Image (cartoon, rainbow, N blue to C red):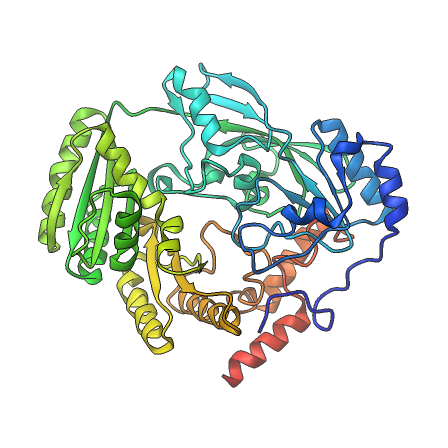
Length: 485
C-alpha cells in the first residue's frame, strides 16, 4: 500500500487562491526570494527520498526572522499550508512540498550568531550546516556532538526537526540531548521561546523531532562538548554477523559506553572499501568500528577490556588506529557507505528502523533471507550500539515495478522491527514514507493523542499537512491489507 497522498483515504488539502497568495507575498519579500515557475521550483520538489515528489504552489526563501513571521501570519490568515525545508537531505519525505501550499526554505538563514565558549554553547540560525558548528567551535577546543553521515550538508534546523543522531549518539545522545533553547514561529506567526531549564512544562523534547508539524524553528542554542584529550578507534573483523552482534552486546554489558559503535556487513564494507580505501578487511563477513574517548587512564582501561571482549567474541582481527589520519580514514569509510552503494546499483532505498540490541543478529538474518528470496541485495550499515538499523536495499528505479517492490520490502523490514520490540524510525523520521507503519506501531487511541498534540499547536492543520499521522481511514485500510496478507 503506497504512502503517496490519496484523497480517498487521506485528509483533503485546502483550495488556495494562488494569485492572491503570490501578490501578498510580493508585499513581504524581495522578488528573488519568491519562486513560482516549475523550472525554479524543481530543485525543491523532494528531499533525499526522491521517490516522493511534488511541486509546491510557491517557494519562499526568507533571510530574517521578521520575514518568517510575516509569511506565517499571511498563510494563517489565508488558510495556506506551509512545509518547512532545510537542506533537503532528509530521507522520509518529510520536506516534500504540498501542492496547494507554500514551501518555506530556510537555507538563507545560515548565520552562526554566537559562540559562547565559557558556557559551552552556540546560538545559530536553522540553515547553518551541522559540521559548520564544530568547525566554528574548534578554535575553543569545542565541538557539536551529533554527527549524521550527511553532516557536511545537512542543516541544524533539519536535525532538530528529525531529531537526528549520528555515529556518536550512543555516548553523547541525539539532537534532543544537545539542545538548550529553541526560538520558534507558531502557525499564526508569533514568536515562541522554549528551553529545558524553566519550571514550566518542558516542551523541548516534544518539539525536537516534531518534523515541522508544530512550529517553525528559527533559532537554536546547542550545547558544545569539550574535545576529548584521547581518542582511540578499533577496527574489528568477524567471520559472522552473529559474532559481531554478540560482541556489541558483550561490550555494553561490560559497562563500556563507546563514543561510537558501528557495524557494517560484507556487502557494505566491501563497497565502502572499494570507494574510500579505508583499509577494511574485505574477507570479513562483518566489521565493527569502536571508538573510545576521554582521559588517558579511562580510555586505556576501556581499550584493554574491549580488546579482550572482542577476541572472546570471536573477532578474527582487532586493529587499533595508529594516528589521527588513520582514525579519520576508518570513519571516512563508514560515513561514505551510502554513496558507495552507487558502485553496486543505480539506486538504493535506505530504511531506518530501531531494534533492541539483542535482536540484531535475528533481524539481520531475517533481512538476508528475504533478500535472497526476493533477489534484492541488501547492504547493512548501522549504529549497532543503539540498534538503529539502516538496511540499504539495492535496485534500479528504471525497471518497471522495481520501486514498488523495494518499498514493499522496506515496509516488511519496518514491520519486523516492530515485531521484535523496536520502532519504525530512529533518526530519519516518519514523514510520508512511514505513515502506513504508524498504524502498526500505534493503536487508534494512541494516534488520537498525536492528533490532539498537533491540534494544540496547529488546530487548522496547516503545518506540514498529510505527514506523520495517518487518518483513521488509512489506518483501517492498511491494517486490513496486512491482515489479508
